[in-house]
Length: 116
Image (cartoon, rainbow, N blue to C red; front, side, top):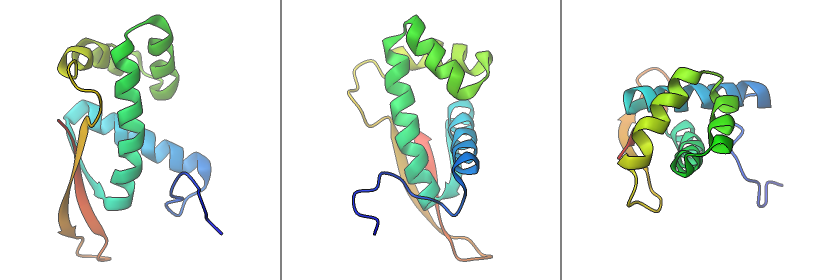
């Protein structure tokens, strides 16, 4: 039984699932919004919200945590430049999910995940 389990499996092994979510969040931080399936958007939102909260601390430990997650220093410096002042007065709710309909091939529900 799945009682009180914390995440969706998304039909992938753990390492593939984490890599996929990392790429979704990376694309979200670069472009500002990304078009994915609804379950993937909901899982990626959890990660993105936590990472934005970490970036608001703006200290060395937060920087190292972001670098270990992304593996790219370029994205981390961009995030630490823009996000702390962008989300300064906000206590949470940094992302928004907009349902866009169903995909033609397999009828999966699609959504746009975007930063506020």
